[in-house]
Image (cartoon, rainbow, N blue to C red; front, side, top):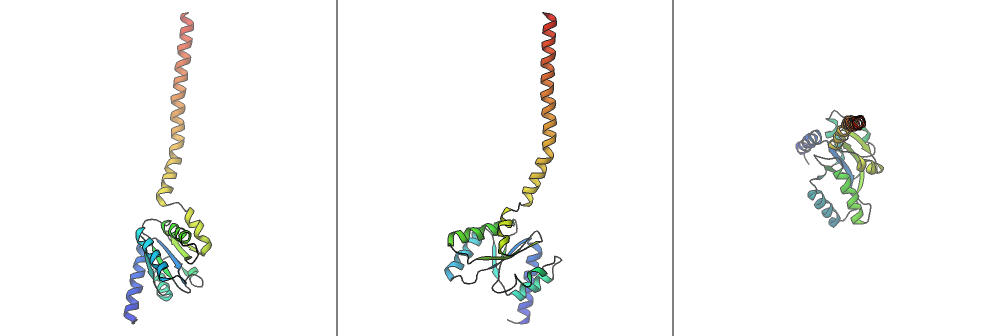
Length: 178
């Protein structure tokens, strides 16, 4: 590979890392061709772009970003590396990894590291954490629900209190009439 080709790959990767806030770096070493083809098919079906790139090129592309990815150096960017990009959700690649492991009946596909909204996760043990992360839209919905809850309580209290007050006044007026 020539220096120009490497430069083009680094530039393309760097642009991808800047525009896609969710990426996972995986290790698929030891997988057969059929297993890799199945993984690629699953990625395609879920809208995940999966590319295999040399670690040095990934490292150089990450160095061009504002976020600090130095924690990837000694552990994540070592050995075989495939990068999964998903533009809309940080959970989709994590779900795919878990589902692939379940279907394949092995742990050949390993999570090495991930970046979700520029937060760094290192190690295979972070998969469960990534699965439980809420998306941006889910967090916004939770905040809106929390903000609406007190207002709903006040309104229902006022409506309920108004009905009680009207009932008490009606009862008192009926007593006076009788």
